[in-house]
Amino acid sequence: MTEIGVGIVGGGYMGKAHAVAMSAVGAVFDTALRPRLEMIAGSTPASSERYRAAYGFARAAPDWQALVADPRVDAVVIASPQTTHRAIAEAAFAAGKPVFCEKPLGASLADAQAMFASAEASGLPNMIGFNYVRTPATQFVRQLLAEGAIGDVTWFRGEHTEDFFADPATVATWRCQGRANGTMGDLAPHMINGALALMGPIAELSVRLETMHATRPGAEGPVTVDNDDHAQMMVRFASGPMGHLYFSRAATGRKMGYAYEIHGTKGAIRFDQEDQNAVWLYRAEGPEATRGFTKILTGPAHPDYLPFCQGPGHGTGYQDQIIIEARDFLQAIATGDPVWPTFHDGLAVARVIETAFAAAGDGRWHTVPSD
Image 1 (cartoon, rainbow, N blue to C red):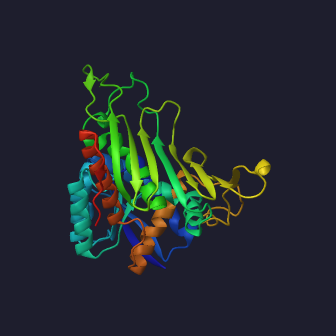
Image 2: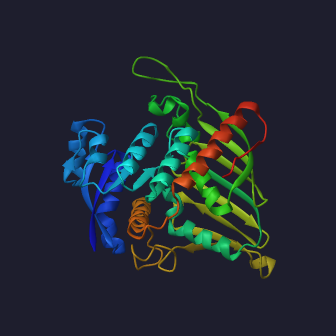
Image 3: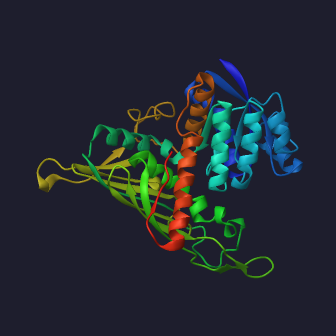
């Protein structure tokens, strides 16, 4: 067992999740590397100290530059806004430190390309935080597809829908300004990554974007919303099947609508993150009168479930996905072998998003660039 000093940049929603994960991962998975919460950096020295005291870090950093340069920080977790990702990652790689970066990889395709190039040049472990594909249920679905459980896949439908901006009276936030902060930059990366993980590369796409509420109330009067509230994307996967992806931050009633439906020649699969411990499987076999979707509750027989609980049907939660990510990051550092998803996978998502904006601009089908 070896101790490793972890530094986290950002102490908000995801910063807290990663701090908790790094505190718990050794006990859950008995990892060879045991994280030490060494340093955290917020947006100001005061917020850094507040997060240090709340999460149990040894020290607070005055800024992210000091955290990355500190000799007792062995690995860096980036949980700050996407506009900061590139500079932090490049500095960490230059300092010889592995990097885990929250999604999306950067605020633009150029950022993602530069970050991937920096990671490759360094030869250091790197990962990106697409946590929803880490649920035992979705890992199980990937196994079903690999085994051909539903035959040849003929159709994929995926969505990431939430409703935090469904009410036009909701006060404007930073999410209302800038392309990178709209739905395509914020929610879409998760389901695009999910589609790539389940179906493989997207060959071409056609997209429509829409701003549902053009203005929102602000502290000093109405604020113009200059990015997208929702988007729909028709796709053709490189493997052949067609598909449809939908993303929205204004889908009334949806709280965590990361969901997908996959049809095949011998069956079908359904999953919804709001019921993250269940997979619905249909097998086209037996008498028609008795066919139907079977609800499979995750348990110790499914990937990465047993370390959390010995009882089937008891379920895992959101934080557990982040703990699984922490295990994978530590494994990549300990072994030196890449663990999916890496910065390369983040770049693949960035390419799809950049192509989507181009397709939305001219209304045509566009080919997604590949390596």
